[in-house]
Amino acid sequence: MSTPLQLINTAGASGIALSGFDPVAFFTDHRPVNGDPSICGKHLEATYLFATQEHKDLFVRDPEKYLPQTGGFCTFGVSVGALFPVDITTWQIRNGKLYFNLNPAILTAFNAEFAGNVAKANANWPGLVEKNGQ
Image (cartoon, rainbow, N blue to C red; front, side, top):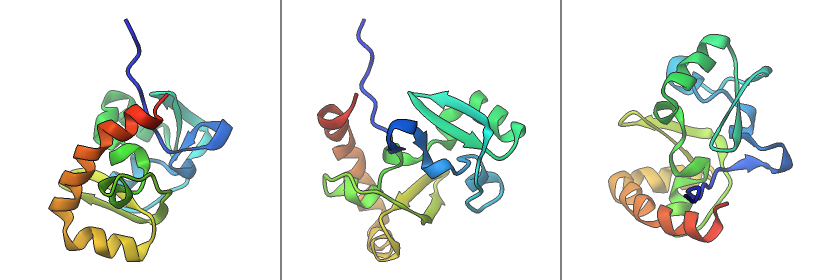
């Protein structure tokens, strides 16, 4: 049985996702919070850092709830078939899902046609994973 391809925006060889920010904190603290390297966990070959053990426990119980969309890449970029890095300050939770974008200007463009851009990103994501995944 083959392992499904994965594509996650990580920091080079360290494999740390979200630039070390705690994925759960976006939902619980409503802001970016740096994770503590001593409270970490792996999911889909990426390492996530957490601010508290409670956040790590929440993530372990339901990682899909807290994972960013499009592997943590710029969702607008994915909507146009490209993989762009993200500016953590562009985070937003919409419809219970975490999104990031390249910069504030791209975030504005993304939000101008939010539903359409999400639909395009969701349609493009499998092909980007197939082309660039591991």
